Length: 256
Image (cartoon, rainbow, N blue to C red; front, top):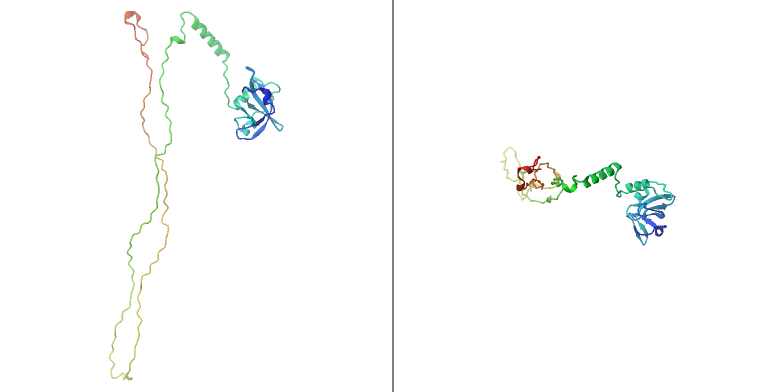
């Protein structure tokens, strides 16, 4: 951040979620190049630190690429007027920023010894080696959509035959002769008799009843598949100079 530290003092600090956290109370510089590295944000009686390297100065103040909850949940550091390297590293780890690696004394000594050995006559350096490489296959799995299946309900009409036992009435004339013993007398004249006939008829009544539930479900089928691909592998072979004769034969293997 090329902004001067004095310009940041009193600036309003806004998190990535759009919430205002507080105002810049103090700016701490990097011990190496002196650029503004951290800002202490005052929010009520609480002070928290935000990184300036990833922040941006806008017309509204300082915009920090971390939400307000992340900022206010940071470590409570008493930096005073100067921030130590340990305090800066703690904040850097909390915000997930890159920490430049420092070589250990053993690594520094080893590197110095290797440089000295490479500079000595007859000693082999990295330029004297061939680096053989090969490809390795890392197999991962992804989920792809393979198709759609739908259930559609139709209405079919089919004829049915249902046997029903019914009856109906028919008339017949019944005649019974009158004997002399009955001695029935009557007047001659017109008369009539009415008979009502009946029959049974089938009455149809339909109702809708549920018979089953139907739905689509995805069934997971486990299987093993073999996939074919190619990988490249480097091969190093010795190509002797024919003019050297048998005296130039190597003592080790000629292939790796």
